[in-house]
Length: 202
Image (cartoon, rainbow, N blue to C red; front, side, top):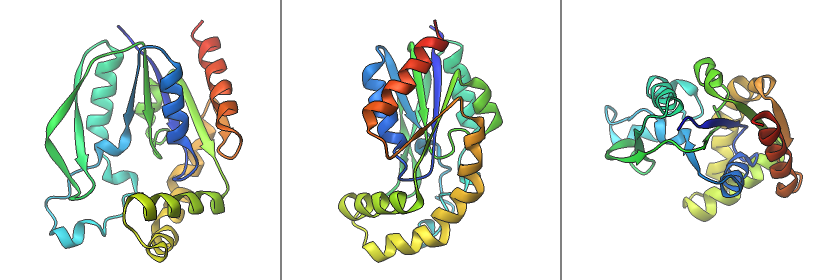
């Protein structure tokens, strides 16, 4: 089976992951791959230094593996999807066996950054949202689920997240077939995206 590949990008906190999850629920026989799983292992660094890396820089992703595995899935071949530990900033020895499906959703802030990955996507979506909304959502997520303090989230956002988004993420909106607002009701974004997919794949 050769899947219909959907790439979803947008800045951190824009709502791209929510769109990807909702689309997966709507599309029968679909799988969702997060580019976060493809970060390069930082086990060459002391543990105290690993968290200091700028994970909002696309250079920290293993693009060779990303494109090799997405290309394999596009040919109807199964792959061993990596598992990345954000606690230790290393790639685990275990993997997840992923079989081809009718729809493959590839989601991440750099979902439209790489030319080779873009060329594999049948549909490319971008989710945009105002900077203050993205920051507020990031604070809520990181404080509630990642044990961070609000000030540490703000400091990181100011130092690396926002500048990297402006440099690497926001410019990729021009590659999208469809751009949706991350502040409009999610049902509207899902409906717009599904309409594009169904029309394009008809």
